Image (cartoon, rainbow over all chains, first blue to last red; front, side, top):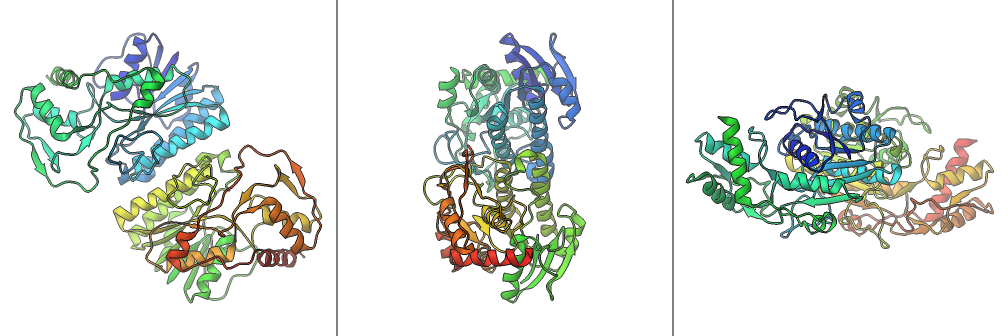
Length: 305
Length: 305
């Protein structure tokens, strides 16, 4: 396919680019900024521009037959601070994108949704896709509205959308800023010889998905005719203490986390049921957790030195 | 209470104003236009302005302790044509309103949601409030997002919101434009000696709520401490043929509807379960259907002559 990856210079996007290239696809990247962590890849077309600039998007879309939409103008933890910016940047921006796709006759759209926020308070078991959507923060509310518009445009305009409800992704090229993911945050602090802080007792269970598995799923899904939402997780829940143990092993650093009072917003257990993705796409998460951590740790040391 | 009714010159809003006055409350109206069907009521304060004009809203909110938000910048049937306008007008507009309320310390917000669109494809039984929200059109998607933001601001900022999920309201002062409600449309056509057209076989069942009962519920709900969503329906399903029979009786006009091919979007049965509203607010729909039709018919004849 002739694919365009919106946000293709970002963390997840850059791995989707890799997976597309590995699959023999033609790749264009549209992003606000160049890739922070590597030079432009040969054979890939690059556009720099703003996701909300409809003309720039339309120019980049020209001649493509599949769109991977991995842009988020907000972070899960901070979108609540300015819901109007969240709605304008992400929801209105995505509606503009869909309008452009419609008018240009591009049907295939892979949208990166959020398995950690669209369902709202998690039940005590792995969450299947048909669980009610009860988001409780702005990030999730906007993701759900976008998913519902994707369904609407599927029926009304023949759009062929897939919403990938991703668990917590981690891996090389995840930003060091501390707003993305505990794993990259912890590794960074170890690298800087700073103490690791956790909220609560460390028993909180989450679903950590290696970014290469996520990218692999995005591309495999796009290659099918499937339309709809699908969970992308590791198939396994890990407590924060488990993660810290594994990080300690991999980095060969004894760790004594600083425990801080639990945050009210943290649910105890949030893990995705991924049987649907396995059935649909002949996909399964292949990463060994320790090995994935090791690669992430190696990458961080290489890029920080 | 010192209430402000946003959209208080409109169909439902004007009845909420009446119900508030009947309850001894102080009333301010904010609307884009004057009431089409009656002169300004004595004792009521009026502001004319645009819902999206944040300064105008803030000026009108000053000194109020309850906000009735009945503005919609779109119609259910036409919002799909321009989802971005729907999101900007209604969702962003409501987020601005909430911001203003927060900064002015106003907590009570009664929001008119939509029982006919927030649930999506209706099950074959009266729909309770805890039914999953799966809206399939823009109008419903935006209403759901707004409800979810109301919940979010309840937790984060102490907002005290109620979302009234109204069934199909009808009654005096419903516009004659044909985009609002089958009952006013049918009555208008009879008045104009035009034939009545229906899509499908007329077996489609809906929940028609007399607007005075709806307004009564809005005010009763605001007077409690309840926060959350609540259905507002008639407690009864009526087929289109039932409605036409009743209209024929009331208008003393023999009717032979023109049957047109059914629209794909029409679900067979959509009726709200209203036991929650009855329990919470000591409320019940009191209108007799034929009598309510009669009042609507009288009003139409009086205002059209």
